[in-house]
Amino acid sequence: MTDLLDAVRPLVACDRVTAIVDGDVRRITGELRVHGDGPYLPDHFPGLTIFPGVFVLEAVVQAAAAAFGEPDGGRLRLTAVRSLRFLVPLRPGDLLRVLAEATEVSPPHPVRLRADCRRGDGVRVATVTVECGWSG
Image (cartoon, rainbow, N blue to C red):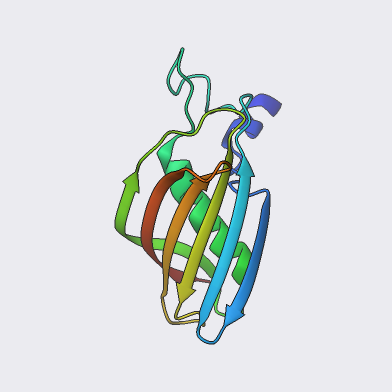
């Protein structure tokens, strides 16, 4: 039963998050070290393990959610993907760095996130533009 519970726990998509508020824009940085022992990696793709692209998207949303905390308006949730482009795969051992800007940062208004996702060596991994809303 413990293995099943471990398999359904939510992915922790950021090891560390920082945010700086500059007027009506919040600049967010999130980082995640891709570990080769995650339950999602061995089968994605066998023999050429890569970090799933949907987890890069999840890292952007989780970084923003961590930067906003838990305001009275509820929790930040992905509501729309406006643009998503994957450029380079991440492999076990790589560092994912999410550099995002968020606008419209107070509930109940939606949050627009634009993110530049890079590997630890500076190579661009993905570009992401999404909208998030607040759920209670």
